[in-house]
Length: 79
Image (cartoon, rainbow, N blue to C red; front, side):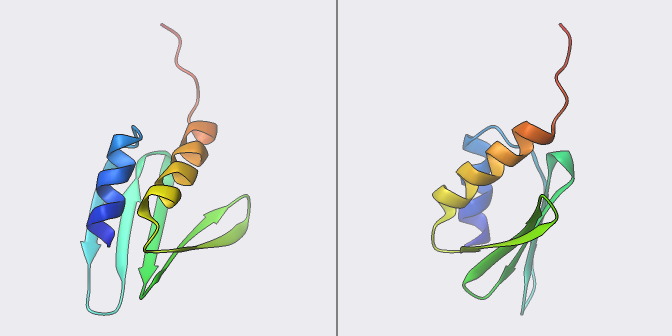
């Protein structure tokens, strides 16, 4: 499931820095300081000071929401 999320995030233009799966948890680090934890069938991350949970089976939906979050938190670059 973590691999599906990595692929979807990359398709949405999010740079994945590291993704690791351990026996009880998966951890993904991406651009803009984003960290996503995968516990069983749930993805978890922090957004606006709140913990967000998302079904791990919905990698596409999670990636879309995470890409929006990264876009909002990434400063604009001048040409």
